[in-house]
Image 1 (cartoon, rainbow, N blue to C red):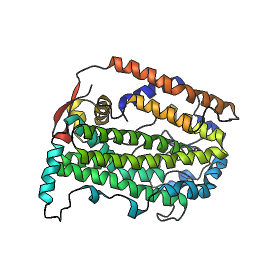
Image 2: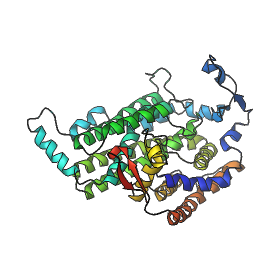
Image 3: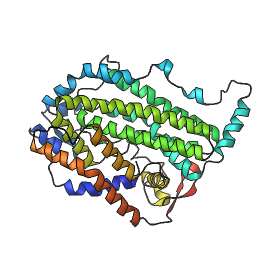
Image 4: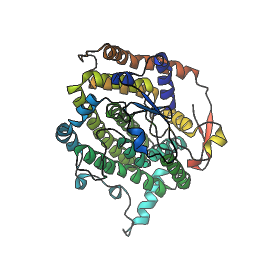
Amino acid sequence: MALNAQRVAASEGMASTSRPNVMARMSRRRCVQARAVVAEPAHRVQATSGPIIMNGQVLHSITEARLDVVRNMKGFMQANVVPLLKPVDKCWQPNDLLPQSEDPDFFDKLHQLRSRASSLPDDYLVVFAGDLITEEALPTYMSMLNTLDGVRDETGASDTPWANWTRAWTAEENRHGDVMNKYMYLTGRMNMKAVEVTIQHLIGSGMDPKTENNPYLGFVYTSFQERATKISHGNTARHAMEHGDDTLAKICGLIAADEGRHEIAYSKIIDGVMEHDVDGAILAFADMMRKQIVMPAHLMNDGVHEAQNNRKLFHDFSAVAERTGTYTAFDYADIMDHLVNRWHVADSKVVSGDAAQAQEYLMKLPNRIRKLAERAEGRKKKGMTANFSWIFDREVVLH
């Protein structure tokens, strides 16, 4: 996500920070303060009725009634979501898109690949590197899904529709970082060690999407995020074609198509929630929008960028993505609009006053974000640059 999109969303969210946490109010139950204690088993913290607040973070905010909605969706998952996975033998594999190292003409094909990639400009390489790193942090995203109550894979090989989806989704996603990494290695255009260091830092840092172990919140997040990723990869495909690398364009296009299919799957999960709990779904959607959708790689760090540039790496990567039109604050607003329409927010028959307020908030938010984005665009300091380790410390214009 472009950082400006996050900042714009933050500006809008400030107007709502005085309101009580919507999802916490839904529980109508006592909040328990918990502190981590040395040698204290984690399950003892979980034993008290929730939601729980630990180290300033809300945990397990879903009510028992709403958790039952999720538990009872196994049939819905099996019928509507799991079929969106592709059989392995129908999936493309990275090897299909790269020169075959066993072929006699491998070096000729490698020369052609490098010739095509030689036209890719530095700003494209920075954006592609950031997307590659985001995809390679896949272990974090599987871990995040397995924090969600009612849907986690309890054994690591559970045969529930939820667990089967999570593992197979992860397996499909794994191909993305794999092919992107191998392709860039072959081009010789990128400092792969710097990229690898960033990946290791990012996986070690994790992510905090503020989903509170709550599957309602979690699947709103994934619905939004998969669409954002589809947009980003779709634009890198278009830009690669413009720069003369049709093979890289094909790779990015195939990844974007996968992300689009996964977006449909996660959006369908919220469809299923709305069939049984419209108020809960609307409240969850609004809660995530107030807290902002943070991008999965928001904690990326290469160990040198901040010291050299006096800014966070994600800040500068996002600025380049915004300037090149790969992912912008306006895309963020468009995704909100899409989900508002996709989930029929305007026509939803809510019951509670809180849900009615959330519904109104969601309907107005996309245009507010667009207006703030326009103002932010006019305030940008032009000509700022940063040096990126991913491209051998070369300088790139931010905006």
